[in-house]
Length: 136
Image (cartoon, rainbow, N blue to C red; front, side, top):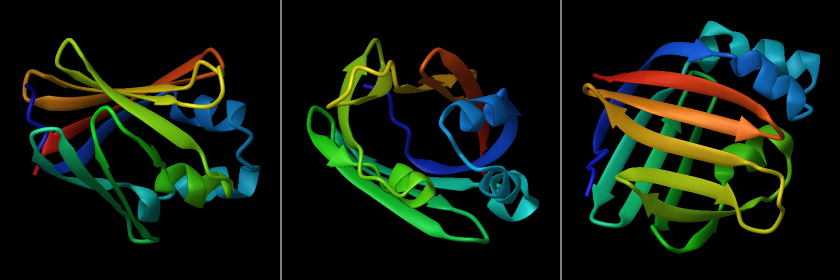
């Protein structure tokens, strides 16, 4: 089982603005999310299949806690889009997979470790973005 525990700092983001646009994020909020105040640090506490993922920025801190295999309300989406989205969590080939549990939108977040970095690949309605984090 992959262990994602630790504090992770954003190193690179690829196609993230296009993903936000596809998700219907307003230009004002996109600008706010692109600011240096919104650069995230991710703190992950993992105990087997139990996760607490804390997203920390200068603007806000959001926490998602869940057990892999269960569903949960994604606090990041709730904060950004103002809607509650139920997320299904699962393991697939050592990767943590999060998908929209109620809508077939093709929404997916894949978290994996690659050469000591955490890669988070997000897909929404055909648009894919990637964020790469290094351990702090």
